[in-house]
Image (cartoon, rainbow, N blue to C red):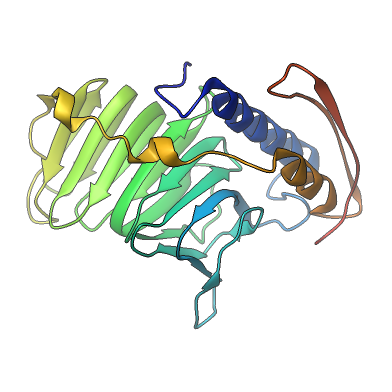
Length: 252
């Protein structure tokens, strides 16, 4: 699956390599365990501006930084002119726009669930098996092998750039294909019939999100988790070199 207008192809390759590394660690850690934590859902690969995380069970938000692990039940919030980039353990590239709040499902299920209270996220599946559901106050968006933009403000607006997304609430369901969009005016209204996106409908905010400090992230993969588990994998770097990931996974 190709990358659509990312900052550059190097960033695209980095994102895919990160997704592969996370998936490798998930398999090696065994069912329900990532780096020994069991509830790790994602890792922060980009932050800009006022980006905060509230840990499950905590009262206050704290600063979210690149390489921070995100756990089931955590809530992430962005301020004005702020953005966050995540890669989930299931293989989704998730980018959060300014003035947004979302929570990672505390259930820790294979089919990942994000609750978007308000704001805007862009998602892209890094492999065909990746699946993610985005729950909003207006509807649930089931993203499958797709690049999509989901914005919950006074209206829910869903745009699909690649693949397909099902948008559903108690009053109806719409299936969106690439190049289509829909709106939902609230939980008491059915999703509108799909319409073709125009040129002005194509979002560009997500293109500003890029991955940096890749080697530092690789180090995080080595050091995070359970010392009883071993991580061993070969990851192709953006410059074509192959990096060997090997070592004990020790909780950070």
